[in-house]
Image (cartoon, rainbow, N blue to C red):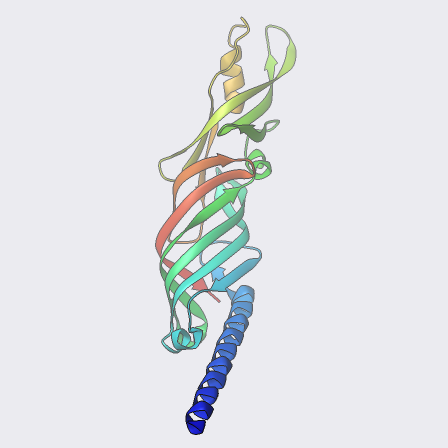
Length: 231
C-alpha cells in the first residue's frame, strides 16, 4: 500500500509538472505569435493570440492547432481609392496547420467580426460629411449643401440605413430627407449623405457576410477558408 501511495503521489506530481510545462509552452507560443503573426494581404497593427485546447504540446508536435483566437487592430484596407482603417478584426481560426519551422500557418476556416468606427467611416465619406451612431440600428449623417436658389449653405442631418451589397460594398442611404418646399433640396442633400464604398484589402480568404450598426461602429461579420498567416 505504501508503494502504491508513493506511485500515486509521483503520478500527481508528474501530471502537475506536465500541465505547468504545457501552460508555459502555450504562453511562450502566444507571446511569440503576437509579435510575428501577420495576415497575408493586409497591413495590420497590434495582434493578440490565444491558443485553445489541451494539451498544447501534443498539438504542436502534430503541427496542427485545433483553435486559435486572434484579435488584430488597425487593419489598413482600401475603399474607393482611399484608405479605410478597420479598427479591429476578432477572428476564431480552426484547424491551423503549421508550416515548416513554424514560420507560417494556414487556418482551414475562420469566423469573426470586423469593426469600422464612425470616425473611420467619416474619413472615407465626402468632404464635409460626418457619420455617427443614430440609434435603433441607424447612422446619423450630417453634411452641408449649397442651395443655389437661396445663395446660401445649409447643414442637414439624416438618419440612414447601412447595408452590405454585392458582398463587398458598404452602402449608406438616408431613410428620408425633408424637402422643406425647396426645389431640388432632397437631391442636393442625398448627393452628400448617400454614398457607398467598396471595401478591399482584407486578409486573404476572408469575405464579408452581413453588417450591423452598433454604438461603437459598424460590425461586419466575416468568414473564410484557407486563411494564410505569415510570421
